[in-house]
Image (cartoon, rainbow, N blue to C red; front, side, top):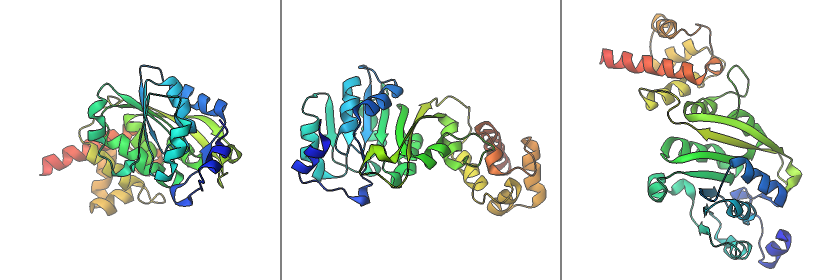
Length: 280
């Protein structure tokens, strides 16, 4: 389809506030959906349908597509773009204001998220599904290249951060494809990349998700400081106690947050959780 002609026909103008940058290459869009491994047995939630170019690609592969779009000005465009498909439902709501548990009542068999995410809200959307969802099987998202590097980073690298540790608790992230800014309409000021997150909520046996989140937040609260110093400042404990915690968890006393794998964060959070239970 001639997306530029359709946009002009409907008098559409791009809104920077919504981070609207549309992918138009049908081969690229199909490649993104193929990388997700979507089949006709699958339900897919798309976030930010835009002009429906990715929605069309998903609909060709999936059994059911539920798209969330915040801009009601795209109604006519989406109607035209998706007129060939009867397996698509568009919901004109802000996904960040939706209750994931309510959405999932109809998808207990599981579903996937595939989206070209607006840059300004990438992390909140990912964390919403990672923390609140019970049934999402995986996510394939197009995001800003720098964010993609953080999502898929390994420990002991500069890109490794809090969101990486949170993803690694419940799954694994892989950088699938780089996408140049020239592939978008209109072109953004940065390049993008596609990241695939495969979820496995039984990856670790964890005593307290809340304590895990707390330890990750503490560890990356001040990247320049050692984990020992961050524990002292955040937990209001003496150096000797902070060092005892790290030693008990077999963590180097000079370690910083970016050196800890998800497995080490699990060990640390479990230890702190049990220590608090013991001390009341």
